[in-house]
Amino acid sequence: MSASKHNDIRDMLLDAAGLSLDRLPMLHVVFDRMATYCADGLRQFAASQAYYSLSSVESGRIGDVLEMYEGMAVAGIFHAPSWDSQLIVGFDRDFIFTMAEALFGADGSEPPVEDERSFSNIEIRIAQMLFEQMAKALRASFALVSDTPFQFER
Image (cartoon, rainbow, N blue to C red):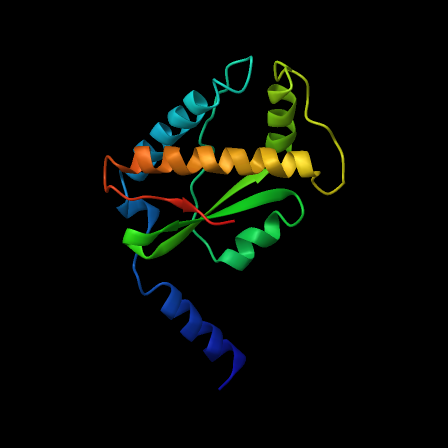
């Protein structure tokens, strides 16, 4: 079997579900609600009010998506048992650094640190706390469509 034939078959299998973002009209509403729930969840941790916004929703192959952010983001994996699926949520370096500063009292007006180092233990713990807040926000926001628990795995 040739390499191009092999890739065509893989593409056909991956696209077999027929899901496209255009066929999920409530998805943007769900994610807007999730942004509100996330901001509300952080009120108890930060002195300044947090604002979340959805910049984009995309579908793609996991390898391609993760490769774009290699070393520049923290990814959390959530399990949705009733859907028998997993969801990956990523926070980029600028977001984690800004949240760390906000949790230590900054107002978020400073530009993120331009540092090419790995994440510290404190930054990883902050990301873990944010992912736990995200699991609660995901459940609350998807309740509009389907009551599903989201369990943060790692």
